[in-house]
Image 1 (cartoon, helix red, strand yellow):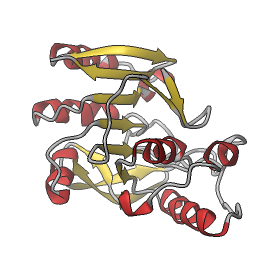
Image 2: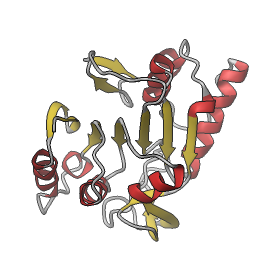
Image 3: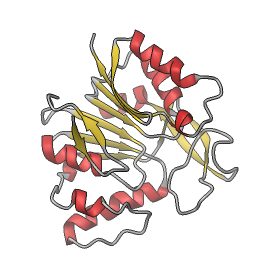
Length: 228
């Protein structure tokens, strides 16, 4: 495996992965760390779709673009200690980035987007009682609808770090017949000990029954590959 990104925001990717300048990564849950996306784009000259409705995440994306233009780190968010060191030598092609400022869900809707208990943190959730009771209303849409809107017929890598919504998104993805070659997913219900209905095991079984194999599990940061 090769590691792309920071300790916090990076992912392990197979050394023998085949990617081209036509490959597409859907990176869902931007937060304030896009080191994975930057290093992958630089290494393979591929296309990145960033999806996150969080205002701070969108601000961070604009700050990253400014950083590469000026070579000066002026970030307003909660930045990881190894972030600048990790991304410094990997200037990406922002012409191959697309930012979608919406949430990912099973269908088009407007949902409550619950804020973190600690205001220092950036991660919000659509899952009730997972964080605070304070929320904003944000627009959400399905993976299928977003792909249609962008004119995409395939996804090479789907990365999900979406604070519990991964269960709903992956279930709808399979129902819609969308099968990325690789899936990087953080199972937050397990990580935060709120998986009371065993939903993580259920969706993992569904992925395996759909032809996927789990090839990496780093504290519930899991990598799946589609075998058939």
